[in-house]
Image 1 (cartoon, rainbow, N blue to C red):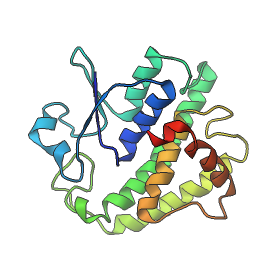
Image 2 (image 1 turned 30 degrees about the horizontal axis):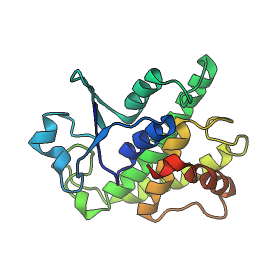
Image 3 (image 1 turned 180 degrees about the vertical axis):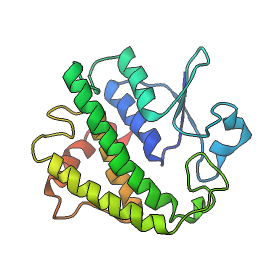
Image 4 (image 1 turned 135 degrees about the vertical axis):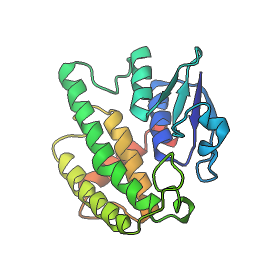
Amino acid sequence: MKLYDYTMAPNPRRVRIFLAEKGIEIEKVQVDIPAGENLAPAFRAINPRGLLPTLVLDDGTVIDESVAICLYFESLQPDPPLIGTDAKTRAVVASAQRHMEFDGLQAVAEAFRNSNPTFANRSISGSEGVPAVPGLVERGRAAAERFYASLNDTLADSEFVAGDAYSIADITALCVVDFAKWIQLRAGDEHPRIKRWYAAVSSRPSASA
């Protein structure tokens, strides 16, 4: 089993943190995204979409998408549970996880990829010949700022993003907050609950995975 990874990217990091929480260690192969290794024929032969992370099982099955990979390992090793424990908590975690992706990660990625010269012709992940759109930078930043306000409100009623238990939603949110630093966006004094939550989740040993 191999996990194709890139240490600087938020999506592969989500899987690494998830695995660290589970205490699972697997072989990792680094694929340099800024250098375009994920778009080279050698990696396209593994994953034609050119996306990371990508998990290759011993039988040759290829699984991409961070949450799909995490679901695979959650099924293999349910403890500690990171995607809920019953119908209700699984649904709540899944909903929160999607919010973190669509409202947060997608917004920051839009601002980052359309402002970074490295991706001037690769503004969509896994694609070449897609020029950056400068106007999307401010749109992405504005959406990310709304995400911060929403996340701060969410944390008013619970210790973690999806309730009182740490979950995959917290992993994604942590990666969003750290990724947002690349576009010079940080939680400020107007986000005290994010600061409280971030201090807790970023101090977990898994956060350095």
